[in-house]
Image 1 (cartoon, rainbow, N blue to C red):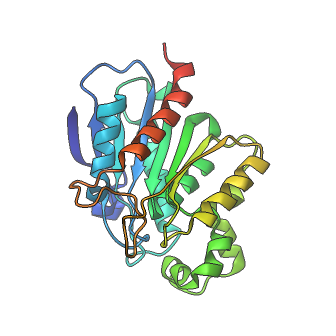
Image 2 (cartoon, helix red, strand yellow):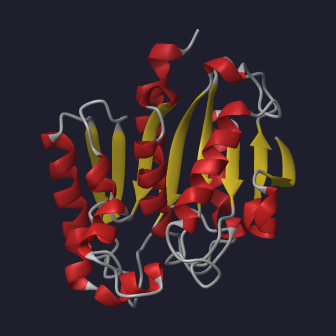
Image 3 (tube, one colour):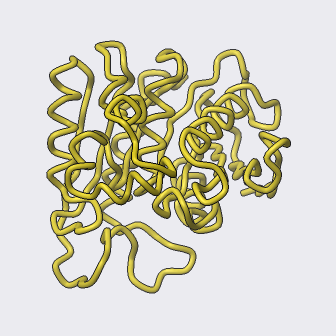
Length: 261
């Protein structure tokens, strides 16, 4: 694996516009890459916190991965982080640093927690023919529903008390169409940061819109405290639970196999 660190995809925002590229050693037979987006409640963490996922995707699936930073809400409120993710996707789709033909390239967009929301917002706003699929790991798909449970979360995201219109415009559920790319959501049954009911209702909306929507729900009752229960405890870099990795890998393979030569 070849890792190229701190490549700028959006120079005007400094370190927030940096990404790391994880490139497989073996020649790729597909024009597919993955954009990975870290979590942290839109206001914390960086690409380094999601490096374990990027390493796994590149090593396990042999796909190029672009693992990104974005502006945190303490620096710039919504829609800055969403705009940055769209800019990163555009960079990945067009970059000559990635193996393959940019004109034919398609991407998966994958994120965890707040990054799951950003992955959905990114993938659903790109041209559908450019997106192979979207993976949300414990992310929020319907902000209108979640706001009723945790209004303070959205004052932090917007930097003020958002209107209903602002919430709708920042909600992935608002961008669902029958042409939307396939969506895969993983969630732990006991998640107390983003309750699993959020994922279930979002997937219901996905399916009602005629979009391919899949889920993987799992249980980690041995974990306690304020947790998404996403990572293997003590893993460094953070590593997803093995069953979550297996489910995500299977989804990606299902979507990519028809295009392999």
